[in-house]
Length: 216
Ligand SMILES: Nc1ncnc2c1ncn2[C@@H]1O[C@H](COP(=O)(O)OP(=O)(O)O)[C@@H](O)[C@H]1O
Ligand SMILES: Nc1ccn([C@H]2C[C@H](O)[C@@H](COP(=O)(O)OP(=O)(O)O)O2)c(=O)n1
Ligand SMILES: [Mg+2]
Image (cartoon, rainbow, N blue to C red):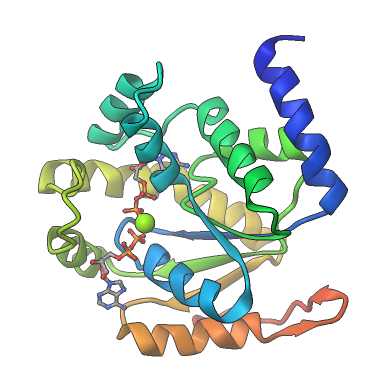
C-alpha cells in the first residue's frame, strides 16, 4: 500500500468511527457558499470546511504541491481529488467535530467518486445555491479578498467548469432526492431564512427528507 493510501486508511478509520454527518454545499463561484456556511456554523454547530480555503492554505504553507495548486486555481481548473481529499480528511480529523459543511466539494465526478470510495461517506444532503451568472460575476468582481482567480478572465473559465463539471454532480445527487435548492440571488438574510428552514428539518434520528422540487 502506498503512503497516500495508508494515510487515507488511517484517517478513514477515525472518520468512520464517528459516523459523521456531512452536508455538501455547492453552487457556482460567488453564489454565497462561504457566506452562508459562516451563518450555519453559528446556528447549527457544524464545522465549515471550504475546499478552496484548504487549497489556498496549502499554497501558503509552501507544500511541494503548492505551485501546481496555484497554477490550477489561476486557470480555474479543478485540482486532482487525491490532493483535496487528503486536506479534507486531515481537517475532519483535526476538528474533533462530527458535523461538517463541505463547501465547494465535490466539484466534479472525479471528486465525488473518489471521496465516496476513500471515506465511504454519503452526504446527508446537498445544499445548492442557485444563482444567475450575472449576479455571481458582480459579486466576484467586488469580493476584494485579493484572490488571484477573481478576475474576469478566470471567472469565465470557472463558470464554464461549473456548468460542464460541477452541475452534473448536483444532478447526480438530485436524482437521489438529496438536493435542497435555494434561490441565492436575494439578500444574505433572506437566503439564510431559507437555509434555516432546511437545517430545521431535523429529528433525533438525523435529517428528514422533504420534497423541494422548487427553490425555496
Ligand atoms: N446574498 C448575497 N447578496 C449579495 N452579496 C453576497 C450575497 N452572498 C454573498 N455575497 C457576497 O458575494 C461575494 C461572494 O460570496 P461568497 O460567500 O464568497 O461565495 P462563494 O463561496 O460561493 O464563492 C462575497 O463578497 C460576499 O460578501
Ligand atoms: N473541490 C475543489 C474546490 C476548489 N478547487 C479550486 C478550483 C476553484 O476554482 C478554486 C476556488 O474554489 P472556491 O470554492 O474557493 O471558490 P468559490 O468560493 O466558489 O468562488 O479552488 C478545486 O480544485 N477543487
Ligand atoms: Mg467560497
